[in-house]
Image (tube, rainbow, N blue to C red; front, top):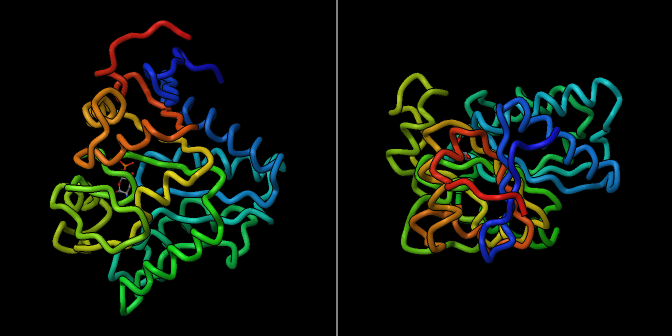
Length: 260
Ligand code: GLP
């Protein structure tokens, strides 16, 4: 699947690929992930939740069912989990991942790594998860979405980039953005345990998927303005191998570039 346009952000290593549709983005990303797993069957795959990665997960399930890829030796690490949240709840990110990927592929349960949403001590769980990630030394490919406020995982706009896995309070904007999965915004947890910016930057490769007009401003700030904790995704400008997979709407505030 070829992008409509492909270029490197000026003076950086970040690559931008613009596609016609979310489906084409998913096809491209699924090909990249499948190829990486074929080359490294015990690949460490960082996963995101939200709507943006769902078409990719659907394509990975299709490829698995077609016998094109096995996840038997893959390890997965999710960016975040609500806290407090029962991991058995369909509203948890673990429940989201089961419904949208895990229950449809041959990934062993023991290979799934997600912060425990029901851990009585959130900070202790964050330390535990960080130790797992530190031992791994960074995932091979980190799938990312982006919040309308530029957050990645649940690293919310703030005064600083937080290096390691930590407990974070969710902004009202983020709770509203995620309320569609709950009966009401009041039911959206107020906190989450999330990988920090350092964990994400340790990934060997980042694939950030963004579609729709509501992400255009966050994408412009993430790619074209000076990196700042006010737009957490902007730290990816310093990542050596970050690729933004965008549809036309999400790329709407990026001026046209010539391919280079
Ligand atoms: C949540 C998740 C993020 C995700 C963001 C955007 O906040 N914690 O990982 O990127 O939502 O979700 P969507 O892709 O549905 O716009």
